[in-house]
Image (cartoon, rainbow, N blue to C red):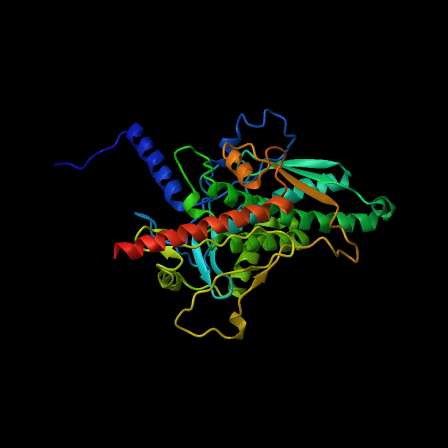
Length: 384
């Protein structure tokens, strides 16, 4: 009997099904996110440059038919910043997990995504500050709108053009880092509330997985360095910065990443149901410290392997000036899941304010996850 042959239509349908399986199993940030925004903004968002492509994330534990994709930290290719839509990045390893001795599990796609979000936000924030605009509206992967309002202090106009240009640049970098992290955190929040970029596909199993917040922090910090030192050669500079940062964090080879995944089986993820047992929920508000979860591998860690502690960049001291009141951020949800979010916030109307609402939503998620874990532990004990 001859082998089965597929015609063009069959092949196209098989490709679509394969992509849907990957999206269902893989985790956060489907590249189809921009399509979810069509028809939701009604042409009211004045954005010249579209949000960057967001790569498909990976999970730090296996799923049915989908093993962990551990990548070689020394062979990640060249970073590619793109705006628009494309499923692949030529020459770039766009997704995969790497374990680091100082930063825990990191998702390469999320690092690249948060870095590119930082650059995208920077372009608009920097221009708005230069033009002394009252505000700007931005989008990311979801239909949500991010409203940024500026309140310029009296000293702004009193500064010399040279000093103001320096302040504009540094403020734009730090604001873009903070907003990119908040965008990434909002994505984790709404996917926990069952947001779906495509109706059949749920990403809830990946919301606040323990590799997500650290990856977002790494991405915004790398982008900040590049925007300060080599913004005109962003792709090349980020390629080098990512490689150097993974080395600094003690990234291990793929085999040891798999060992780290196995070491937390039935601790951080359930080896029977292939689901998260524990989530690293971090709201990203100023002053909130983020610590990665580290795995005890066979070898002892030395002083150079001390865990990294991350914090969002502050606006309180830039060249001796406090700019913490310069900008306020509000999120207009524009998603079907906002009713449940508003119910938990007891916020019947108005926009989401990250400084006020993210810690409250984080507390709701943590409490619900603790209750779920206790229930599942009791059920497993009763079944024995």
